[in-house]
Image (cartoon, rainbow, N blue to C red; front, top):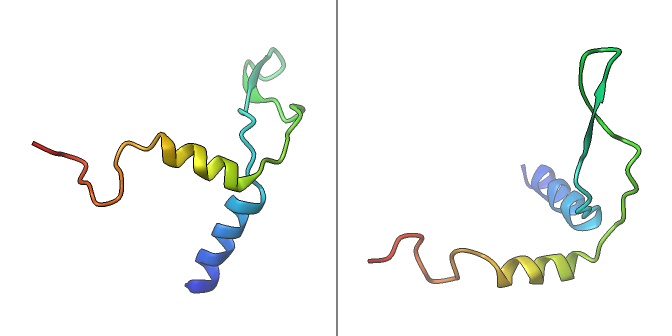
Amino acid sequence: LDHCLDYLRQVVQCQSDLTPLTFFWSDQVNATLPNFGDTHTCRDFKAIHEWSMQRRAVHPGEHGHQE
């Protein structure tokens, strides 16, 4: 299990990509399909982590619901 969790951690940290997945309408299949042609950019995981920590809903030591 530790190996699996470490693998997932590495994927998130090493392949951080904030590019949204867009879709397009295909008349051939009469449905929306993912646009895999978008340009993707790898990001600095530390910067992403710091950004998300500044905007989190619950801070360390706090509970999600406070009265």
